[in-house]
Image (tube, rainbow, N blue to C red; front, side, top):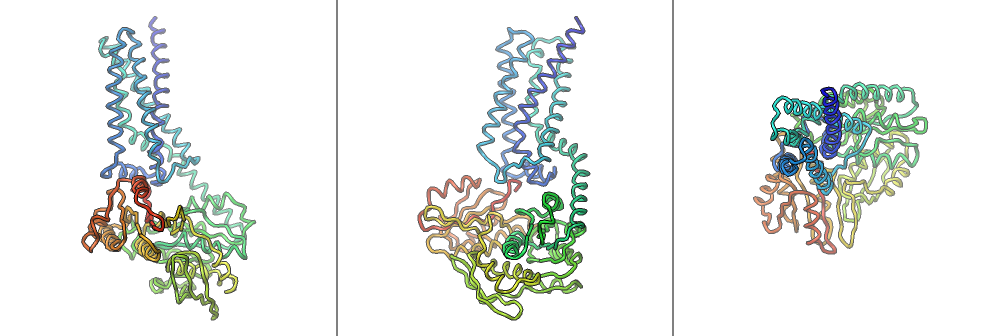
Length: 532
């Protein structure tokens, strides 16, 4: 009988642990998405969870309370079922965990969860970690029940499982640490394979870095060079070792002439690491501003970090004219992209004179803003260095399309939408507001402020608020950064009646539905990732 009872309890523990863990793991989806957006950094995950106004932890507390209360009520109501009452009451957990998942889906992440192989592996690890913890908890509770022989404890023996929603963050963090035992060496092996493959390919490598404008310049350069060469470039904002390695390993490099590699950095040494396995023949520095000052600490460190690409450049570098002198001490061959003049910006595009090889040509592009002309200058100068003629370059520039989420103009029911969601730097914000003011009709800005500015975060967001004065409507999103933006707006002549504050981008979109009219232009300036 003892063996039978022991086997029965063991089976019960395993079944309950698997079912409960499966239901609980379903609630992890959004948290895993945040971890993914954080670069799988536990520190950033906990920083996000602790931000003022973040409802993640309070919602988990509410889930715990609902589960605990409903479990206790059901267990007591089914007390006539004896030892099975505790098992029947587990239905309360299933009900509220399902409701939590349904409610969670109604508020989508701004950066949707991407179920990459790595995230799938992490999901499996979190499930097994949860299952092991739940199994041992259930086993201990049943053992305590066996020792105490108390009717009330027997009925409520699975009540402590209601605490597990409160442990979601620690469980995910622990699972992430366990998963990294495999992920770190796997990633290094993946990068080594890319390095070997690139070294054996006959392809010209162009590296692009800078505090801002990297992705835009990369897209423009890709559009120009593609008129003459077979071009492969890193997708979207993939600018880390894994991002570059993914592009290299996923493509046959023999099918391309040029590989454009966007190179990002948040610390000294990041660019040097990228150049070590992906050494550029040519390079571009798009500009310097106090972006990522939070991690770099000083602007001098930003210059040093971006300058690492010059140390790895084999042939020649093209540098934005406004920061050219900051790299004067680097010995590689350099060229300034000071080749545009007479810039004229309207709501329909940008015109300028492009000068290359001593020849001039008037060029027009649908891309908006003076900064677009300067980004084109960088790409045009490099294309000229690679052998394209001024005529070829000018024709390619006139055919350029809007760059997604970077002052992308979208017309919808008579309303102009300027999608500048991926812009989060000081210079880009100023340029976007200049573009907004070129449009006729009412002008509306939606922004959560600027991030990763370190000690300048408050002053630069104050300055952003000042730049918003004069617009017809201003909608500030969230509460992380908007206090200095609001202060800068109101203290410099902004009207309180035109200033609105909403908790989320979705709430801002709902507000716009009620105020937008035909002929209006609305600028979405910096749609912050969920981790902010």
